[in-house]
Amino acid sequence: MNNRAFLKFAALSSNEGFARLAAAAFAMDKNSEMSFLDDIKTAVSEAVTNCIVHGYEGKDGEIEMELRSTDEALYITITDYGVGIEDVALARTPLYSSKPSENRAGIGFTVMEMFMDELEIKSVKGKYTRVIMSKNYR
Image 1: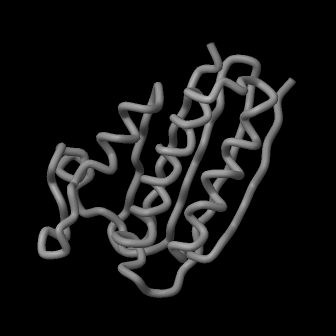
Image 2: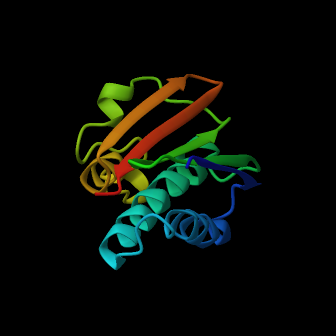
């Protein structure tokens, strides 16, 4: 049976934990293994943190998170309507950071790729960034 949830929350660091727990709770009925849930929480943390730090650059904004479940996989889409990414391929390069002066590690997308089965990034400079991730329940 397919399931779906949609959340919208302020782009605040304090909501990163909320997003992590919401995603894990949503996925629990299909796979309650701690390693599976930890992978989900880690990937969501990275995506939400990217929205706050890079998408809105500390300014007010909202983050949308859509959770979708099929019999086979969990799909998570996280969107911000901030500054967008000029060069997605460059942003996906391990250790690249658009904010090197802030001591950012530049591994957010790499971490998401490591913990999820699929990762797609769509962005339009000045409009939005959307991260689409999936993880098989196997």
